Image (cartoon, helix red, strand yellow):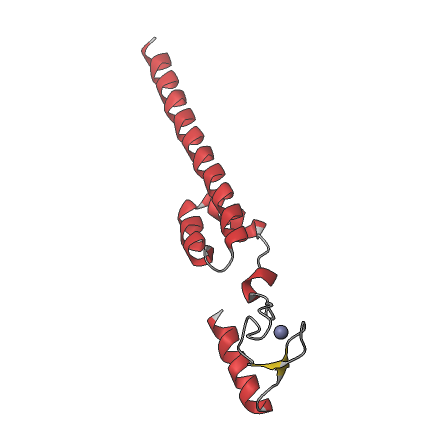
Length: 118
Ligand SMILES: [Zn+2]
């Protein structure tokens, strides 16, 4: 997230340069390094993975309003692939529910119209 990155930079500026060491080989490495240049082991987990918990609230929202789901899907598809995927299922479910609802309305509409003629 952009706000988090800005916050981290501010904290770093206050504290000064924070040293980081590789958890595998123990050598000091660049603070921003994601992969240790010495042994090639990943030292920093992708931040998005930790918060990538599919939200059912967002799912229900996108189920009722597919447009919300579409927007959230495009926002999340890079950062939170798991959430985006869950959202996708909710959206499909929502769209199917809406289609069924409209078909039912049309069927009921025709049925009541037919009743009217008889
Ligand atoms: Zn290393």
